Amino acid sequence: MKLRVPCMQCFQEQGHPSDELMSVELRDDGLLNITCQNGHATVTAIQEQKYELLFELAVMALLDGYPREAATGMAASLERFYEFAIRTLCAKRGIDDSAFIAAWKLVANQSERQFGVFIFAYMLEAGTPPPTIDEAKPTHIAGQDWKNRPWKEFRNSVVHKGYMPSVSEAMAYGELVFNHIKELTIWLSENCSEALNKVAFSRVAVAHNEAAGRLISTMSIPTLLSRTREGFPARTFMQAVEELKQYKPRMHHP
Image 1 (spheres, helix red, strand yellow):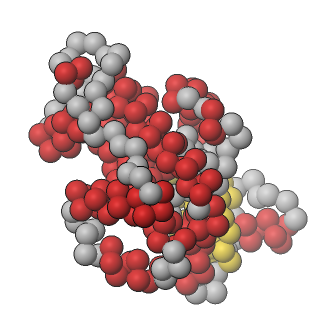
Image 2 (spheres, helix red, strand yellow):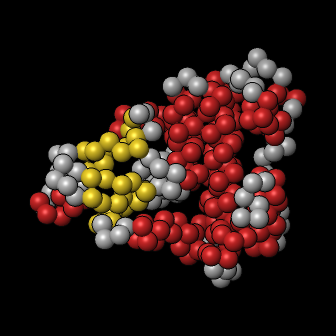
Image 3 (spheres, helix red, strand yellow):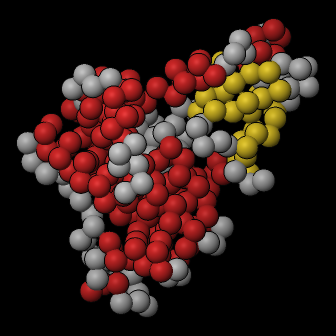
């Protein structure tokens, strides 16, 4: 996916936004390296977290008619949200980010271990196990036998066995993941707000380290899972999808 991004150095020099919008491919680290027609080399950091961007791409895939790619993206988004939540919970306890990174390397390739870390990190903070969705069962999709099987089996079948889900299955799975992440995000906002903000803006610090003298700016995308968007706690998955249809043209595939 590519984003259309203005040059912020042109903006500073001219006092108004430039008419030029550069098409820049989204990188894994959320940093956009830009060189405009005036030769300004700048770095723009996307404020949204990786799990937000993955979920956004997944729903875009669903809207474009690719339910399997959508379901795998939603599953990846949830895993990266658990990582974000663990990082936040560690930050609240005063654990340095470098220590977190060192510890994360020990579980980085094992999603089951990561999920276990999340369960106990949450329980240390809340005193109870977190809400989970692995054993939840679909209740309103037709045409398949998933009503009698948990979503964990659905996810594993799609990711590891090449199962090709229907649009209704991918939509139902997306709604489940959306509601789960939203519930936990609200809990983090209410219980770990300072740590949450610290972790959320850590990417800007990374941008400063990579800037090498270039101007640094930030950019925000109104993602479906953005906790700073007005009405986030009450927004339903279907409302979020309808909103995505409105601003999807601002982004495009390469």
